[in-house]
Amino acid sequence: MKTELRPPPPQTPDERFGQLEANVAALFRLQDSLSAEVHALTDSLRQYGEKTSEALRVQAEKTGDQIRHLTQLATDAKAPKETNWIGLGGVLLSLVSVLALVGGLVLWPLAKELDELKADYREHAHLTLHPVGATKVDAIEKAFDVRARELETRLRDFAQTDVKAAEQLALLQRALVVLEEQAKRKP
Image (spheres, rainbow, N blue to C red):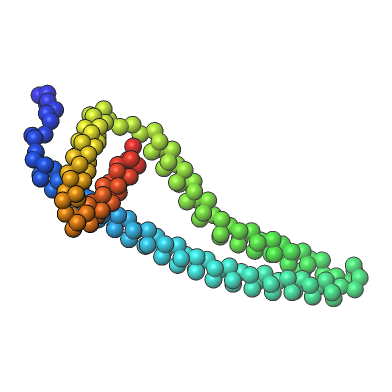
Protein backbone atom coordinates (compact mmCIF):
# COMPACT_ATOMS: atom_id res chain seq x y z
CA MET A 1 0.00 0.00 0.00
CA LYS A 2 1.47 3.33 -1.05
CA THR A 3 1.06 6.26 1.32
CA GLU A 4 0.65 9.70 -0.01
CA LEU A 5 2.25 12.69 1.70
CA ARG A 6 -0.32 15.35 2.32
CA PRO A 7 0.26 18.78 3.76
CA PRO A 8 -1.14 19.32 7.26
CA PRO A 9 -4.60 20.90 7.46
CA PRO A 10 -4.58 24.70 7.53
CA GLN A 11 -4.20 26.14 10.98
CA THR A 12 -5.21 29.44 12.42
CA PRO A 13 -2.45 31.87 13.35
CA ASP A 14 -3.27 31.31 17.03
CA GLU A 15 -2.84 27.54 16.69
CA ARG A 16 0.49 28.01 14.91
CA PHE A 17 1.56 30.51 17.57
CA GLY A 18 0.69 27.96 20.25
CA GLN A 19 2.83 25.36 18.49
CA LEU A 20 5.69 27.82 18.29
CA GLU A 21 5.42 28.47 22.02
CA ALA A 22 5.49 24.72 22.68
CA ASN A 23 8.55 24.40 20.44
CA VAL A 24 10.29 27.25 22.25
CA ALA A 25 9.50 25.61 25.60
CA ALA A 26 10.87 22.29 24.34
CA LEU A 27 14.07 24.01 23.19
CA PHE A 28 14.49 25.65 26.59
CA ARG A 29 14.01 22.25 28.29
CA LEU A 30 16.62 20.77 25.96
CA GLN A 31 18.99 23.60 26.79
CA ASP A 32 18.49 22.99 30.53
CA SER A 33 19.10 19.26 30.05
CA LEU A 34 22.30 19.90 28.09
CA SER A 35 23.48 22.35 30.74
CA ALA A 36 22.93 19.75 33.45
CA GLU A 37 24.85 17.14 31.46
CA VAL A 38 27.77 19.53 30.87
CA HIS A 39 27.81 20.32 34.61
CA ALA A 40 27.88 16.59 35.45
CA LEU A 41 30.69 16.01 32.95
CA THR A 42 32.67 18.89 34.43
CA ASP A 43 32.28 17.44 37.93
CA SER A 44 33.38 14.01 36.71
CA LEU A 45 36.47 15.49 35.04
CA ARG A 46 37.32 17.46 38.18
CA GLN A 47 37.05 14.32 40.33
CA TYR A 48 39.18 12.37 37.83
CA GLY A 49 41.77 15.14 37.90
CA GLU A 50 41.88 15.06 41.71
CA LYS A 51 42.42 11.29 41.72
CA THR A 52 45.06 11.51 39.00
CA SER A 53 46.88 14.36 40.74
CA GLU A 54 47.03 12.30 43.97
CA ALA A 55 48.53 9.33 42.10
CA LEU A 56 51.04 11.66 40.42
CA ARG A 57 51.97 13.17 43.80
CA VAL A 58 52.70 9.71 45.23
CA GLN A 59 54.76 8.76 42.16
CA ALA A 60 56.62 12.08 42.35
CA GLU A 61 57.52 11.41 45.99
CA LYS A 62 58.81 7.93 45.07
CA THR A 63 60.78 9.41 42.19
CA GLY A 64 62.23 12.06 44.50
CA ASP A 65 63.31 9.37 46.97
CA GLN A 66 64.95 7.41 44.19
CA ILE A 67 66.77 10.50 42.90
CA ARG A 68 68.03 11.26 46.42
CA HIS A 69 69.20 7.66 46.70
CA LEU A 70 70.92 7.92 43.31
CA THR A 71 72.60 11.18 44.36
CA GLN A 72 73.79 9.52 47.56
CA LEU A 73 75.18 6.60 45.59
CA ALA A 74 76.97 8.95 43.21
CA THR A 75 78.53 11.02 46.02
CA ASP A 76 79.56 7.92 47.97
CA ALA A 77 81.38 6.50 44.95
CA LYS A 78 85.09 7.00 45.49
CA ALA A 79 86.47 4.91 42.71
CA PRO A 80 85.01 2.82 39.90
CA LYS A 81 85.88 -0.36 41.81
CA GLU A 82 83.98 0.76 44.91
CA THR A 83 80.80 1.92 43.08
CA ASN A 84 77.85 -0.43 43.16
CA TRP A 85 77.14 -0.33 39.44
CA ILE A 86 74.39 -2.93 39.67
CA GLY A 87 72.56 -0.93 42.34
CA LEU A 88 73.05 2.29 40.40
CA GLY A 89 71.78 0.62 37.22
CA GLY A 90 68.75 -0.69 39.12
CA VAL A 91 67.95 2.78 40.40
CA LEU A 92 68.28 4.25 36.92
CA LEU A 93 66.09 1.51 35.47
CA SER A 94 63.45 2.03 38.16
CA LEU A 95 63.56 5.80 37.57
CA VAL A 96 62.93 5.32 33.83
CA SER A 97 60.10 2.86 34.54
CA VAL A 98 58.46 5.26 37.01
CA LEU A 99 58.61 8.10 34.48
CA ALA A 100 57.12 5.82 31.80
CA LEU A 101 54.39 4.71 34.22
CA VAL A 102 53.48 8.30 35.10
CA GLY A 103 53.41 9.27 31.43
CA GLY A 104 51.24 6.28 30.63
CA LEU A 105 48.83 7.00 33.48
CA VAL A 106 48.38 10.55 32.32
CA LEU A 107 48.32 10.15 28.55
CA TRP A 108 46.66 6.76 27.98
CA PRO A 109 43.06 7.74 28.98
CA LEU A 110 43.30 10.92 26.93
CA ALA A 111 44.63 9.11 23.86
CA LYS A 112 41.97 6.40 24.19
CA GLU A 113 39.15 8.96 24.44
CA LEU A 114 40.54 10.89 21.48
CA ASP A 115 40.68 7.74 19.34
CA GLU A 116 37.07 6.86 20.27
CA LEU A 117 35.89 10.35 19.39
CA LYS A 118 37.69 10.24 16.04
CA ALA A 119 36.10 6.87 15.24
CA ASP A 120 32.64 8.14 16.19
CA TYR A 121 33.14 11.22 14.02
CA ARG A 122 34.22 9.14 11.03
CA GLU A 123 31.16 6.88 11.38
CA HIS A 124 28.83 9.86 11.76
CA ALA A 125 30.32 11.69 8.78
CA HIS A 126 29.31 8.84 6.45
CA LEU A 127 25.64 8.90 7.44
CA THR A 128 23.19 10.29 4.90
CA LEU A 129 19.72 11.64 5.43
CA HIS A 130 16.91 9.55 3.99
CA PRO A 131 15.15 11.33 1.05
CA VAL A 132 11.77 11.26 2.80
CA GLY A 133 13.34 12.66 5.94
CA ALA A 134 15.10 15.36 3.95
CA THR A 135 11.79 16.36 2.34
CA LYS A 136 10.12 16.53 5.73
CA VAL A 137 12.95 18.59 7.21
CA ASP A 138 12.77 21.02 4.27
CA ALA A 139 8.99 21.34 4.70
CA ILE A 140 9.36 21.99 8.41
CA GLU A 141 12.03 24.61 7.82
CA LYS A 142 9.91 26.37 5.21
CA ALA A 143 6.87 26.36 7.51
CA PHE A 144 9.03 27.67 10.32
CA ASP A 145 10.35 30.52 8.16
CA VAL A 146 6.84 31.48 7.05
CA ARG A 147 5.53 31.36 10.60
CA ALA A 148 8.49 33.35 11.90
CA ARG A 149 7.90 36.09 9.33
CA GLU A 150 4.19 36.17 10.20
CA LEU A 151 4.97 36.45 13.88
CA GLU A 152 7.51 39.20 13.34
CA THR A 153 4.98 41.19 11.32
CA ARG A 154 2.22 40.59 13.84
CA LEU A 155 4.47 41.51 16.73
CA ARG A 156 5.67 44.69 15.04
CA ASP A 157 2.07 45.77 14.50
CA PHE A 158 1.15 44.88 18.05
CA ALA A 159 4.15 46.73 19.51
CA GLN A 160 3.16 49.93 17.76
CA THR A 161 -0.17 49.99 19.61
CA ASP A 162 0.92 49.27 23.16
CA VAL A 163 4.03 50.06 25.21
CA LYS A 164 3.63 46.97 27.34
CA ALA A 165 3.47 44.89 24.20
CA ALA A 166 6.90 46.24 23.25
CA GLU A 167 8.38 44.45 26.25
CA GLN A 168 6.65 41.24 25.20
CA LEU A 169 7.92 41.81 21.68
CA ALA A 170 11.50 41.95 22.92
CA LEU A 171 11.06 38.63 24.74
CA LEU A 172 9.51 36.97 21.71
CA GLN A 173 12.17 38.35 19.38
CA ARG A 174 14.88 36.88 21.62
CA ALA A 175 13.10 33.54 21.49
CA LEU A 176 12.89 33.76 17.69
CA VAL A 177 16.59 34.53 17.43
CA VAL A 178 17.39 31.49 19.59
CA LEU A 179 15.10 29.32 17.44
CA GLU A 180 16.68 30.59 14.22
CA GLU A 181 20.20 29.96 15.53
CA GLN A 182 19.31 26.44 16.56
CA ALA A 183 17.57 25.80 13.24
CA LYS A 184 20.70 26.96 11.37
CA ARG A 185 22.92 24.62 13.40
CA LYS A 186 20.88 21.56 12.37
CA PRO A 187 22.13 20.00 9.11
